[in-house]
Image (cartoon, rainbow, N blue to C red; front, side, top):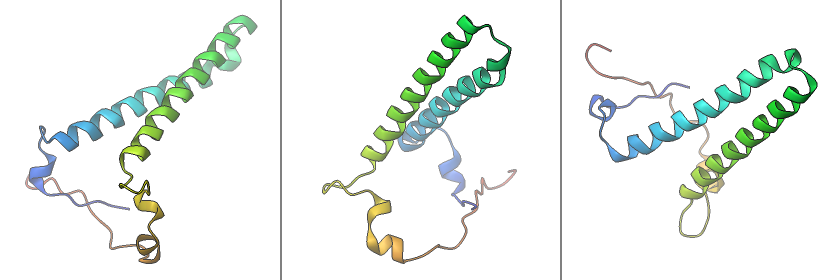
Length: 105
């Protein structure tokens, strides 16, 4: 899937973009921690392995909370998310969207 956005939307400072960038950064950082621990888990001593597993569980809990808040934030007044709208679901896939930063991108 490709996304197309206007060049103006690619500039920093737009409040919605700040929220999205913050969420992406938070999720990315937490995933990096989880993957980092997962990669070295087999090399750790038993006690260290328990600490690493606890850290992975904590990061996963934080990820779930972040994603839950994101889905809650996107719901309408009736508590329905855009993915739950039958008209949206029945419309099928839309045309591909492409990120387009404008000149020089």
